Image (tube, rainbow, N blue to C red; front, side, top):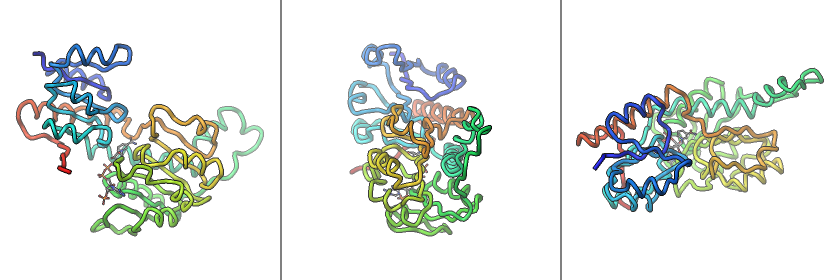
Length: 316
Ligand code: NAP
């Protein structure tokens, strides 16, 4: 048996080269028949490196009889069937902490994009419109209320950055966080009502699916902006399209979508949105560190050592 790792993506070339020193690497590519790759190597595949855009389903787990570990290249594990992994005693790891700052930076980039119209401003100059007049006004961040939905690692890093922009910070999580100076708001609706910018930074779970729905967008109001760097599943996209079209909210900055890489085309025509292709962690520095952590977890597992960043598989 050739110990093989099924690689869905993410890793940069230096980390792929390192991985190849220890394992046979089977790259998952749409150029080849993915099912054939799995079928032909099913007995050899002992690990899967999954990515936010391509997870591990129960049927994939069932197709791989010798799978021992799923190492997610990312912190969110919403696309891995954890119950199926637990049933088979398959270890799961992810890459928390080191994705925090870059992802928080992207939240601020979206904030500036929608409020200060930075993307539009760039385009305005490039296509020669400046010669015919000015871009017009935008919205100031100073003194505005940033409402963070999910004050975890990334939420806190966003709060720090927004504080530096002299914004007031409010947050909602399922529990009030100890030792945090920001105002805790007990419901998402109240958070939306009180916020100028509602910023989603919670995980994608069954509980958070469509947590930002028509009612929440209505509460955010016509001067309010929605920022989502969490997961597409967190926002009811149909309700968002209606709210943006009818100017029930002022705008939206989105790094994540329900059906990536497919983005509702209606958004392309709107000038009150900024759209990023899920680039929260997409820097050379962070992606390289994530790759090293993925590799570290795989090596630890196959040496029988403790995992570096295990995901706890809870019993229901
Ligand atoms: P984290 O440290 O676990 O923080 C998540 C926070 O969300 C926790 O404080 C949690 O607090 C809160 N939360 C969980 N369920 C909630 C609910 N039902 N309602 C309200 N709040 C809830 O995770 P993180 O490292 O900050 O990452 C957060 C998420 O960001 C990831 O899961 C991932 O989906 C996303 N992400 C996106 C990118 C990107 O490229 N755009 C990059 C990295 C991560 P309580 O337990 O008190 O509720």
